[in-house]
Length: 393
Image (tube, rainbow, N blue to C red; front, side, top):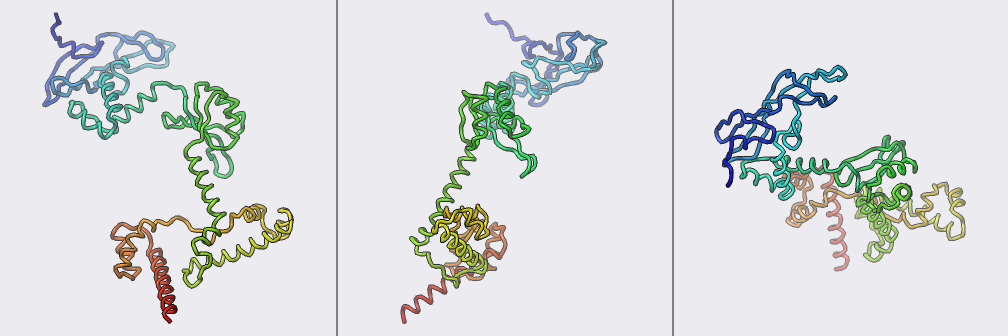
């Protein structure tokens, strides 16, 4: 036979119910601790003398479709131990009941944590409101992160890379916990022994993400011989994109020849492109002089002495890495090109009017960018019309 529901069942463990009040749609329960004494958090000595009292108002599980807020009469105690440096301290409660500074009881916190794991932040914020325990999406995510960080202090998956204390002068390794997504420590220098000592002191590490350099790889092999080494995503993307650009740069002459753009008409270039083209012609003269010396059997050192160019420049020329004509950078105008082409085809030719229309649509660039684009289109159309006229004659 089941027992009757008592008023004491409303309170968490070690608490006594003083009174129960209904305030609108809320149920307010006044509680006090059952034990008349507690223990000092520093010296662990028993304390009975109360200095003052204050109220804590955490939320608890709902009852009968009503939100429940607890009003706990917490106490401040004097520590009478002579050897203890603490004089007054707040009454501590069991973490399984009510943690320090907590705004929710432990049993409500557990349900919020499970909802955050199951539904996430934004989708999960609507469901607890129907359960009469509303929490925000940020609170759901914060509770999940806090529980994960409290599970274990051991490192399992880390990333190690260079960190600049003074850019270009002083560097040291930074170690990050990739599971909790937060930095762990900064090592004092990039010496092999420093990294090896730190890694050997954390045998729980199973996976280490690093760059493709050999320095950290050797330190990991010595400090954690059983750990798995992986290349992190950023360095993979950086190295692959750099390798792709180098391959394209070496083949630019063949690419321009295949596209029929091997010969550049200076009349179709804007002022900025003309300056770039003149620089390209000067580089070509330098490249051809270095290539002739290399074909004649001259060593790189002798080429550097005869031409006065740096060793790196000579190596880049011999490797085919200085064949680009225009050293262009990505432009934010590219996403507006369909809009510009549609207006141009509709008969809009005024660059300033086009820029004003783009500004009204959210464009943040200057009018000179649009003017250069319009000038290039006019020169291209003029060249095509003159070509057609000559073909008709």
